[in-house]
Length: 335
Image (cartoon, rainbow, N blue to C red; front, side, top):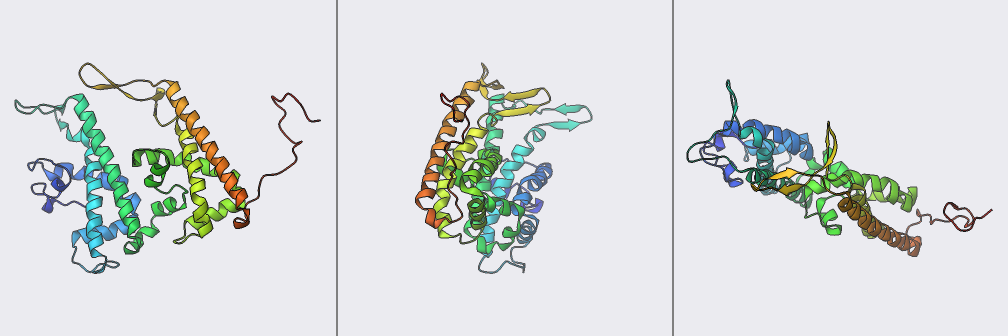
């Protein structure tokens, strides 16, 4: 693990990131640290890169393949970023269990005359804070790695890096620049599957098979072709807005054995919250607005391609006979 008991006799290492009590027993949170590592950190870094970072954490002065005097300071900084994300996600992951005493008599919640349990709204805010801080720290970690990619060559072999590079919207920051998601990695991950759908259907249809293939091949290169780099913003703007439109009816969906529910928080008399259905109108308006904006940007993409057709020989402009059309709903009919 990237935290160890010998460095946390009084939670010294953990307290650099989360203000926990020095009296906390490290062994009580160790299982949740391990679970959070397996769930979040290892899949993002890749097993080889994680093993390298773990070896560095175990003995920073040891001779480790791929770590030199030049990049050693960057490994130290990366370790801090990873630990910050990991400990926040640990407390989010294990919050309910840490709050519970389990013994032969069952499950209990400890209270004393001087220490009382949190109100429900405080618990919700705390869990949400750990979750958001953890995922935001993952973004910071990834940005640092990508800004110093030559120092972390093993990251290039990770499945996560391959997937990110092959996407036309590779990061939270790129999406946030086009549509305000409060720089949230949680939202980015939720919308990513819809980004893939829009890439496959709308963007692929506009670019055509040849140019779409070329764009996807170029973006994974360290130095993409300049013409593709110029084209990329025209692709990304409609892509993000259309992905938001597709996601608008599903971002708040909670799938349970009782069916599908849209969730939100509603204040109650005791400052707590409860799950309530949202109106379809809110999702509908978001979807309609995003779809219109996305389609407007698609027209700009088509216009750019037509105006610069010489730079994109793979692009085939739409054509065909004006007499071939769908006659449904028309006041006149071609025969």
